[in-house]
Length: 114
Image (cartoon, rainbow, N blue to C red; front, side):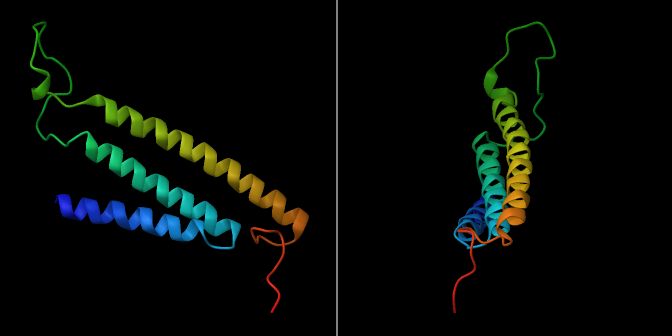
């Protein structure tokens, strides 16, 4: 299972970097989204998955923290999802404005000359 997760994270990160290096603005935005998905999976994987563990203490006694799920990676990923959604929305607005002004969605504002 760890190998599948590592390959998934590597695939998302590699595809994201490849798309970021493309000449079209829309491809750059999709690449940033894929890269953020890969980073979110990485952060979630670093919090170690525990199945069947209680998320909180059931009684008012001191418990062993190793027996419970860690909520910090989940909170970090939730925050990162919200931030990446807002960043993607902002980049889409910038893309539409730049395309309206320049007439193309090429990164440097002009089509390559043949």
